[in-house]
Length: 334
Image 1 (tube, rainbow, N blue to C red):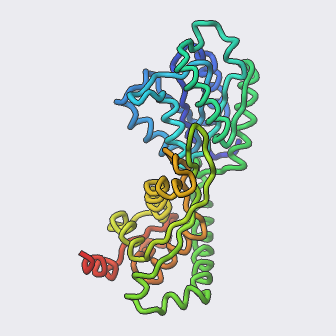
Image 2 (image 1 turned 180 degrees about the vertical axis):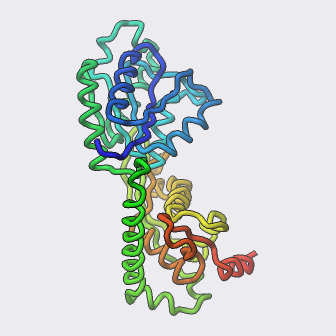
Image 3 (image 1 turned 120 degrees about the horizontal axis):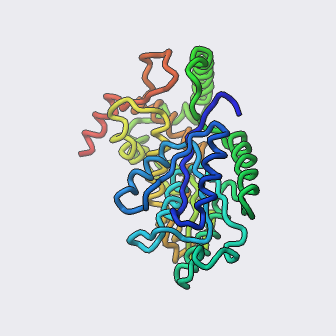
C-alpha cells in the first residue's frame, strides 16, 4: 500500500451469522492501513442520518452479507439494504462480500420467514448486479484473501482522494497548483470553440430562454428488475441557473455542480424513466453526462453567472460563486 490512507464504511447486520467475518474484515482492513468504520449497535431510524454521513464522507463502502437480512426499517427494508441503495445514489465505489452458500449455515444463522427469505434473495441479486466489486467467499481465509486482493484492485481502478501523511504536503501542493493551472488552460481553450463563442455572443434574453439538452444515465427499477437507461431532458439556461443559484450564494467547491445537478436529475429521473418503463417505481445511480456537466460549467462562466474565484490562487481547491449579474437576473424573475 502507498502513503495514502482510506476511510471505509462497512455495512452489515449485527447478527451472529457474520460475527467472525466482521472481525476478519476489520483486521484485514487495518493491516492494509485502512480506517474502517461500522456500527456496533443495532440499527434504528435514529442512527440512519449518522450512517448516511459516514457514507458521504468515506472513500469506499463495503457490504458483508451472510444468511441474515438484518434489522428492518419501518418500510420493511433492512437498514443494510437501505445503506446499499443510498451508496448507489451517491455513486460510491462498492465492494461486496457475500456468503457463497448461506443455506449451509446452522438453522439459527438463517432466515426462516418466507417473506424475509425473498427479500434477502432480491438483495443478493441487487448486490451482485450493482456492486463494482462482488465476491462470494466460502470460508474465513478465503474472505481475507479476497478482501486484500479486491481492495488493492479497487484503489487502482477506482481511485479516490483518500488521506495522505502531512510530510508530503509541500510536494503535493506544488503538483496540485501545476495541475490546476493546466486544467484552467485547457478549459480556456475549450471555451473558445466555435459553438461556445457563438452562444456567448447571443443576446442575453435569447440565451436565457434557449434550451440545452441534458443527457444522463440512471438505473430504473420495474417489476423487481432494473434497466440502465440513458434519458435526456431539455432545460433552459435560466432554469439551470435557478437550480444552481441557491447553492452558490457563497463560495463553494467546483464539485457542487455535479452534486446539485445529480440531485436534480435524480428527483426528475423517474418521470423520464416512465416514458420507456411505464411501471418503473424507483431510480438509482443517476449521473449527468460528463460533457453536459462541462458545458454547463463553461456556459455559467461565459454568461458571468457563476464564476471561479481568483483569490487565494495558491489554494489546492477551486471555489465558484454566484455573480452580481446572476443575482440581478434572478431578481427580475420574481
